[in-house]
Amino acid sequence: MTDPVAERAEAKSAEHDLEERIARVAFNADGLVPAIVQQWDSGEVLMLAWLDAEALRRTLTTGRVTYWSRSRQEYWRKGDTSGNIQRVVSANLDCDGDVVLLKVEQTGPACHTGTRTCFDGRDLGAVAADLDGTPAT
Amino acid sequence: MTDPVAERAEAKSAEHDLEERIARVAFNADGLVPAIVQQWDSGEVLMLAWLDAEALRRTLTTGRVTYWSRSRQEYWRKGDTSGNIQRVVSANLDCDGDVVLLKVEQTGPACHTGTRTCFDGRDLGAVAADLDGTPAT
Image (cartoon, rainbow over the protein chains, first blue to last red):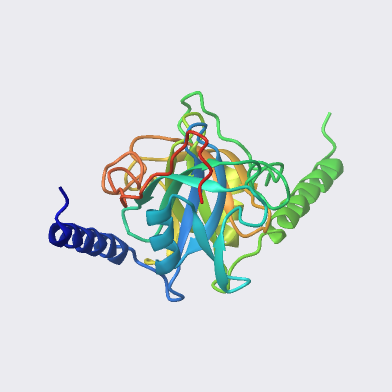
């Protein structure tokens, strides 16, 4: 047996809870927050993109990642053009509330250049530290 | 046998090469680029922080990660106060040149709150997608 009044109350409460979670985000002066996107099982960092409150709302509720495109000034549901969709596994906020970590299941390459991640083959040539326990100075 | 003239020429060439790599970075209007920081072996995303050209130069050449602190407006070599240092393993630029991925060896917790990463226990409650192959709509 369903109770329509109880159902409506529950839906309203879930919506309220969602808005409370979104209100915890410290969006920047442009109303955006950076999202780090990581393949949930391999740990690969795939890309970084930007969310406004509405893109975050869609990402948290639909199972598909939606961004705000700063260059095109429009919502961009990843994969709608390329087919390389991102299914949402989890979303976490950082300690300062100004970065989101999205764990996703990435279909195909994440990068528009066709590489798996946006960081493939783009080495900045850092001098690596000695990891054998020598204190770095 | 060392040839001081050849040595000086080599040092100058290395410096030129470093400046060329830094010049590839598309810093934002504030002269900053976000750095995603990842534990190199476990794949944990530890934090996001910001670099200016000089912080990037120090990070690429010294084996220790140095940031620009936007709140304190000063250079911040991670771990100098807390002991929780970050040794550099690699640095990559993304496809648009406006994000850096730093792989590091993190000593202790990365987060100033004492958690291993800045994202621990800060779940935004996303509705997870069905990962069994059902096409997400």
